[in-house]
Image (cartoon, rainbow over all chains, first blue to last red; front, side):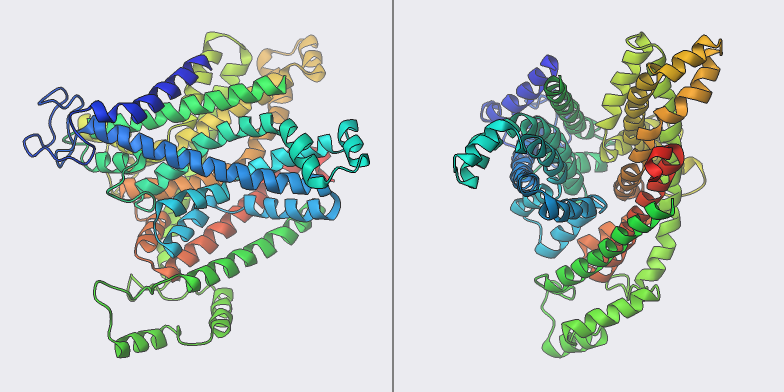
Length: 260
Length: 304
């Protein structure tokens, strides 16, 4: 898990801090170096089919992918925690009905729901992460509900109820702090999931739009040009896979630590 | 068995109906029209087009008509592939997608289960660590990365297999591998966990004490209970394969359902997108049903 943390941190720091120090911006076109080889004419990883610096583009794409993924995971965290906490707290019929909805949504093809949303409401980056967040909250809702159900009748909760604390205050003051560790572990597992969905959509041309770029767009452009400039496919692809593997490791590690 | 089936159908059918309703109203609520092009159409042409496709009727009448046609397997006309009905496009694309998905599922199950067994037999050994590493990597390999990379290595550099298109079985090898990898990784992990738990149980120790060969212990006593988590993973796996096929068909230029779906989505071909979404939702609900029935078959306690 330490290696994974280090890898994610290194990628994130590079994507956030390195670009200003590069000689080329991610959208700058170097007319003298179209499809340049690595380490030639000031481009460490070469350039793409229109002469844009591959390293700068990969870093810019990573930044967008990470930003969209964190925002979408937060949306999923908010919806999932609220939904699960309400269902678990009120129990009975409310719980039954709310969890029925979750089960029903689980059975749906998520990706298609997001794609339909993209088709209907146009392709904006805001919608990309709202849409992804809106379909990735289900597991979070289940986990939080389970936690809340387990906590609901613990003495310290009953005591504050008996003392006449308002429900909102109990939820915020006593329940959420106890649910938070588990929710955060699942949040860490949701992020790689969202990275994949975002890249998938952008690869198909339904996610992030030019002039912004993301790892999915870069992989798509690289695949079109791979016979001449294979690095334009391999570099963003490798960054994407490394990010997802490492984030999965971190999430799994956190979850196992909590299960003990 | 009957009870499970009925209970599942009681949630599956309303869910499917909700999908139909939701996608219908979403498509109608969409800003802009599928006929919007570079230049705005003049009012008369626009009215004629709306009339021809029945878009000038009241919304409820449109819905009633859509449902009535749907009940007869008619998804309406495609707005982009002129002269084709959505049903005809689906009939063309679905067999290819199902073949791709079916082959990928078979490959994923075979490699995943054997990998999981190899890992569980010697916990902590080199095979266990190798399988765990490979599985963690495979789970994180999206088809839109593996697809092009495999094509680059085996088609462009080594020249062993075709880059794209559908001619003969050889052109299916790379798409099937790219599609199967993440599922194989997940199956391997589930098998490894399930099997190492089962191998620690009393009935397995008894079978060993009776002097059965390790192979017989595994095959007759340990494998079936160990595979229950794999069976409950089958429905999400099928959903993942359908979704993955969308990308794989685009990457390898296979004329399957997924490619029509992406084209439809990019061109705002509403009837096509709706038809495919409804079909996919139906398929996934069907796979869930099958997985539940299989589950009941493997685990008598779940028959309830």
